[in-house]
Length: 174
Image 1 (cartoon, rainbow, N blue to C red):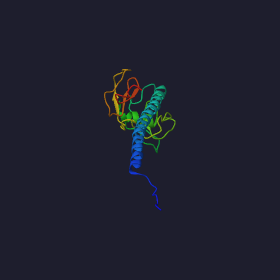
Image 2 (image 1 turned 90 degrees about the vertical axis):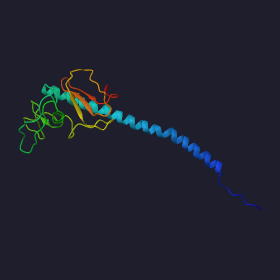
Image 3 (image 1 turned 180 degrees about the horizontal axis):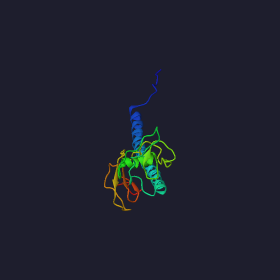
Image 4 (image 1 turned 30 degrees about the vertical axis):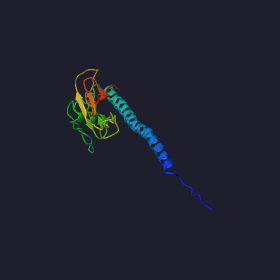
């Protein structure tokens, strides 16, 4: 009487390994593109929110955020005043993330004088989801066709017309 040993041959194991490798080669790039799509979706969402905040600020103050200084405020006793000079990223950040008065001066606390905002509920504007940069390039072209030649920047903001775009040549037309 002979016993027959049950098991897989080397050829069968190799066939299974090749099939799994082919499957992995098909599936892994799908996950990579999903990550890129998520970044672009987050970028679009951030742009929409920031643009809405900029528009609301303009409606309430009569000028674009960043085009006036955010410093010089006399805040209530527990408040901290903004520190941004005219046409700077700091002024833009202060005016969108803090309470403001009609002139655009910013304060960390609210009272009857600082009754506007904050327009963005964060300490600063979010980073560009594609590049990871939160730098805002302040420009004064006054051109609705504002574009970028960068692939590593954060944001571009024209404080003359209030246009806010991603500072990346592939995503500046969202």
